[in-house]
Image 1 (tube, rainbow, N blue to C red):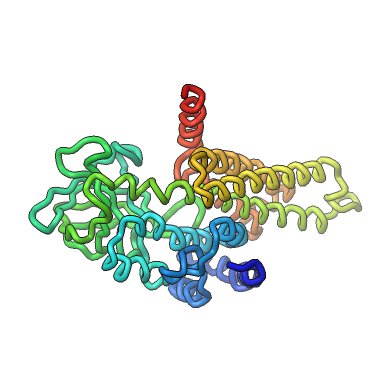
Image 2 (cartoon, helix red, strand yellow; image 1 turned 180 degrees about the vertical axis):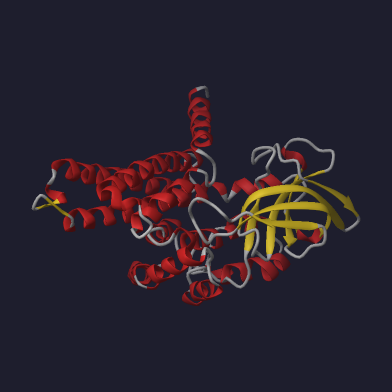
Length: 380
């Protein structure tokens, strides 16, 4: 998008986050859910179609431009950020492997915000890679799906699960398949597990399947390409997006801390005049700037198809997650005891920050990715 047009869009998103977005945040916290009217407003504003290319109905932003918008959205309520992040990202996993019918019936409507696709990889008894145990057996033009999934964001309210399983009897990545599973499929049981510490309003599900029929025509890519769909074009940019989400949420925590330090008076002086407080805020500012710079470096690398992008994405997420922990802790400390009360916005920010440690892999996973790249290159 031309820069002049992009700056206008950035200003519009900022105005929405600081205006209607704050009103929605209060409603979400009170209700514990994201109202349908919010989803409709995000769709009407075009905020669910920003990251995709124009031929899919998106705005045609570069990835670096998209990260600039994610930074702003992440200053809003965590569930608003989650909606925008997920719905602007699942097309990346699907599109390289989709046929034209799948693009017409699922991907373009998903980009438009007319339907929701839930990324469905994680299982309760193993990790999120080649050890998946959900299985399908093929009978003619139908797969029959059996297995369990959990921690599935939007798994309750979605229209399709983008689900990953393996051919019955197979091992390793060569037996994996990616399937678009209709939310209403017979043989599926959905348990709402949305009662989380933070990110209130985002639904999560545990899923069980028993011989659930899925048309072979709903497979993305070939048999054996399931993990390529799951990880290939999705995980790296999504990790960068989560890193930028940490930057945006840290900026919100810093805004609240600075404002409180300036308005709060102790012994006749603003709290901000106390060197201990001023140094906390200075450390936060440096921490945020450093994480932001690394995240943008990773975003540019992925945008340019740099082979180092996957490792950089893990570096960015690792760094940004740890930064967010430090910044929100200090921001809460600046507020003192009053910050612990739910009447204060910093209380919600502090709760929501913890969730970022688990999105797209824990810190331990990121370290494993970085170490594998580092040692692999050193060893030739």
